[in-house]
Length: 99
Picture 1 (cartoon, helix red, strand yellow):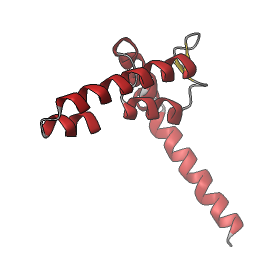
Picture 2: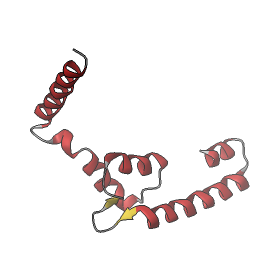
Picture 3: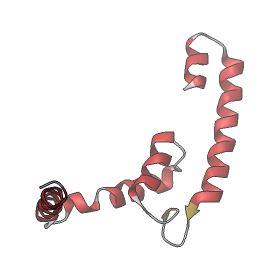
Picture 4: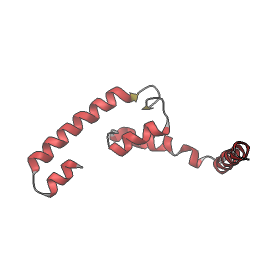
């Protein structure tokens, strides 16, 4: 974001320095948090996958697999049934807790 703003105002040296810093951060982030065995970040929780996508640090070769994994359940045939079941359990628990 800073690099884009620096480019907009014509400060190309600051933009270049910011991009170098971001690239170094992205490399280090991936070295520390990428789980090459499972092809995901950390343990594979959705929140652990969304943050790197939002930050823009996911390498190009991993982006499609990560998005595919994140959206898997939305394509599952039982997805509406799962969502309804979770909703009904939640509502039932609310009724029990607050009669």
